[in-house]
Length: 340
Image (cartoon, rainbow, N blue to C red; front, side, top):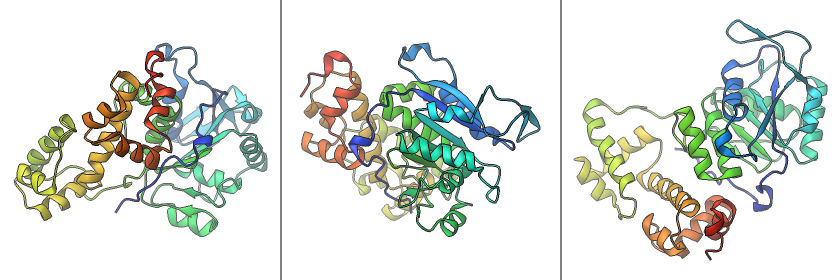
């Protein structure tokens, strides 16, 4: 079963960072895919995002020419000194679980952390953060193959083995390679709102949102052929009409299955339950409406199937540590920010 992870922790920790410089760590033995994710998300020019968008740089841990997975050799323009200038630092994997983390890198990351920079790891990059001492007493995750090793080596860390990513405010960690995309999009959503994250996801041609609490892997990524024809349209129908109240019995009848079979097949195909899937979709829709529409908070709650503004506020506080009005004030257009 996937963990139910509260992604946001302290609202004071998730304000827009004034320092927009994102620095990715490069090293000999670089994990090519994980590094590519950081470049694709943060390193490309995106004029449609305006002048307030991220800036990007690469900090090389090793001198001279370095190697990357897949037979690539490269050099970086910057060195480890860039870390102290960064607002966000990304460790895109690491060259091995048993590979030492250079003292200079550990010290630079710890100092950056103390000065308020955000640290983010993808996959095995969490071992660099752990070696730097910034994860003690915190929750973290990594690729499911490495979670036990992480827990054994760093018992002061609470390792969550069955989630895509964990957001601890100024330290964020993700599971295996593709989960790094989810975490990077989550960070954009934190900084710029749902619409901006969806725009970047569209450029990447990936799903705009997978919740951090979703399982790293599921029993069946695609339903059996005779079930796919029933579950696929069912998910589309639920997504198209989120305002409707759905019971398990209703969904089972629509899918032509027993309730027990529906629950089993739904979780096997999506990694979660119908109720959790619906809530995730409804909250995502609510955020989009708060950013882009002039609907009142009550109307947003009703449109998304959350019933009342009180219920909407409850779920926003529980999942995002904020209120719908505060979210609109931060991410909505100027003419919407006066909406109570």
